[in-house]
Image (cartoon, rainbow, N blue to C red; front, side, top):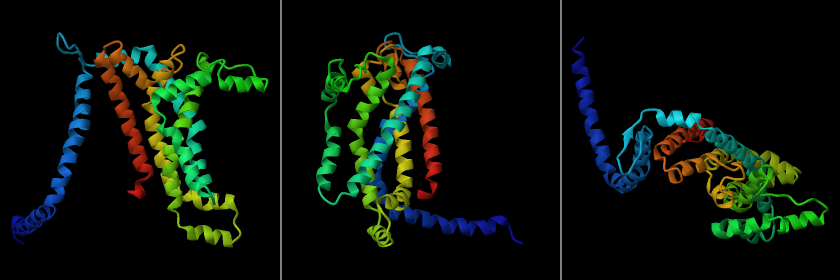
Length: 305
């Protein structure tokens, strides 16, 4: 037998030109991708790396940063507001699943079954999504008012008025109901695209076999949307875990921190308490958890990639 190097050398020499040729062949493709890659690194991974670094510092824009090790993380785990925010965020995520996750699915299937006025129905379902935030929160504060239209309707039905905003039992439910009304239109369009991509031959064959509307939905539509539903579920979990805008604008975390979410607490630490180090530590903990959720989504949909 000869020297191992004598056998490997020709292989290495033969592969090198192929690799070089492949790079040359796709050179302009790489060049077109380069600006997007640079922007992605500068505006996503560089801030993440700096956030991981700053979470170990006490940030002071006047005196300079001071390395404090794990003190910020210790402060996080000993702050009762953090556990309140985690509990409220989990409760908020659960409510969005119960009250809102199924709404766009039902709406998309119902619209796809329409024989007439389907275009008008799509526009009507999407219109709440284009309402500006300032108008949205002002409108719903008026609707939730003790003398607003919702309580007026309840009074006409013989039901006592409900303090949607000032009662901690109802405040989070009121926010989720408002966001479901506004947000379901955009998710509905995604589901509707998935429904319309299902081959019509399947439905025609089912109708010939005597399948009704419910059987077509049960045995054709929902199984075909399974991967999309899982993806949208994971995206909703990620999105709702980062929610803070409506809690801030409508109730500012009240009453009695009943709507204080994790992201809103990060905003409070950073811009109210000016404790950027602890705020960054909170953000890094969220980054780790959401990364694990993303890995879970990849595992669940691995066959689709």
